[in-house]
Length: 204
Image 1 (cartoon, helix red, strand yellow):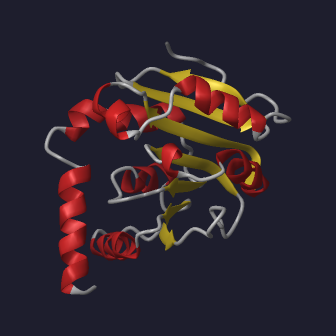
Image 2: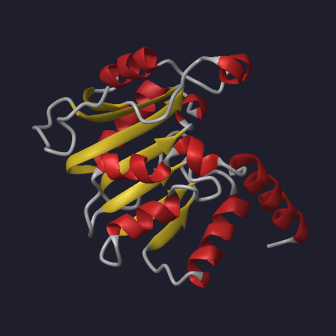
């Protein structure tokens, strides 16, 4: 990676993962709520600096696989180097296609944290994504509510809007968790899918 790339990664790590983020975001509770199983294939869509990526990699274990997908090549390079340093062999990095995630294989879970509002044509995007979900596959969306600074900068989507668009894309709400204030955490499955014990309980 070039010096400019390393500087950019360092700046983004400082912005995205400030001191106290774990206390505010409660990532371990978020991952626990998903009940990810060893051996599953999971996607961290919009992986950024890998805040959730490595937690997901540990959750699926060496028999599973995690795809870190992001448009930032420098961040992906940093994740790949970090995985090598930490001995994590089940992490793969990939660039998304212009209008879809471009997943290389069917997956059990697609996880998005504060990425939903960045996606263009979300109904079409997630409609196409459904083809890459295995039976029982889920899409978990963590998104800021339009409050405070998020409202000013537009980096948020109200949960009702997320739900309405996902329903239009062919999904149904399977679970909703209230873990972090001012954030929605909703899990969706294809509308034709059957029940799953991991997604039937709803926390309020």
